[in-house]
Amino acid sequence: MALENTSPERIEQLVKKQRAFYATGTTRDVAWRREQLKKFNKGLAKWEKALCEALWQDLHKSYEEAFITELGLVYGEIGEAIRKVGKWARRQRKGTPLTVLPSSSYIVREPLGCTLIVSPWNYPVQLLLNPLVGAISAGCTAILKPSPYVPNVSKVIEEFVADTFPEEYVAVVQGNRLVNGELFRHRYDLVFLTGSPSLGRIAMEAQAKYLTPMVLELGGKSPCIVDRDANLQIAARRIAWGKCLNSGQTCIAPDYLFLHEDIKDAFVEAFKKELSGLYPGGTETSDKFVHIVKESAFDRLTAYLVDGKIIAGGHSNKENLWIEPTLLDGVSPDAPVMQEEIFGPIFPIMTFKDRQEVVDFVSGREKPLAFYYFGKGADGWDMIARTTSGGACINDTIMHIANSKVPFGGVGNSGMGSYHSERSFLAFSHERAVIKSPTWIDLKFRYMPYSLFGIIKKMLLLSAD
Image 1: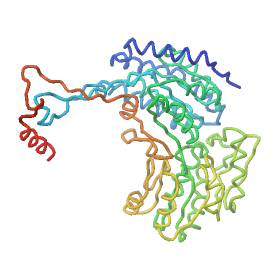
Image 2: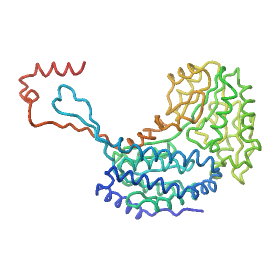
Image 3: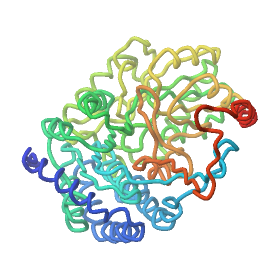
Image 4: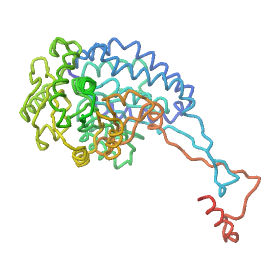
């Protein structure tokens, strides 16, 4: 199915409607926000079956994987927000230095206002609705823009949102890059975008004239290092799972392998064995293996297969957009497969003798969204201390996104800002400093002509200690 582009007139109408609704102050009431979150939760349960069926149609994503990686995470975020939004939104009393006494100091968390949330196709439910939890809990309105590459999911999301919220509060806009351009033409109080670095740059350039704050969750080539003393069976299983999840179409998928030369052959054999354990009948006919989203992505991925020697996998079928999980050996750092994020089930392999080689290689490229190390814990911490990434795992892959108590976000080319749990609330909020001063006393030392400057100086120096 093809989605019809939302017209420029309709987009302008929605932006104006949402600005007018936000101006009424309705969304500022915390009890009202909590009720909207409850409606959100109830609506998600009502539309869960339709969303999972659409994920199967668009991506060949099983119900189990759809729930674990998409809807389950959204349910968790909504549930926590319902329980804690009152605490998050509460005015906070802060300490007051001697120089400001007898005033009292506060932080007020207020909603940013009217927001735009743009999501990609790879996790089209989670990556659109999780930010929406933050927008609702913070007291914002939201225009949602799902991806046209998963039309069945995007259509169901539109119906779900229209069934759950009034459009002056939350609304869906559909369409291609032309619609993105039209959306970015308007002013928002926050743009929350998950996508490619190139789309992030387009959005930033368009919103620069408004000085719009942005949260960008992008991507990059996330390295996966397996050291000589790693538990190869566990490493192979967790890496195979992380790469095969969503068929590698995950922004934090391990992108390429850096294997210590002493364990390279043993790891490859362990990887093959663990892959067979995950998919005993192979991946092509498995209902637990996601397929590639579209033909152009399939063509791009299969073109990488000439960039090295295929030592596992390598088969594909364009008819059903299936690519077998593949290991590529003898890959040059300058090969096309090592230039851009792969976003598919292809694993180029490079080797190292000393960890400094890995540090130099990773640090010499754009900052990745994730960093994975398998080996001794102390060595993992050492590698993390000498590199940078949005997030990281030692002896695991992917799982840092599953803990809402730690931030999820990128750095540099892989993004800016973070979210999940209270950080989602904060992403859509402004922390406003407020000083409340009494009128029963008015100390003269702060006023011109500063006749008590000596005392003021001592107070300032004392406050700095």
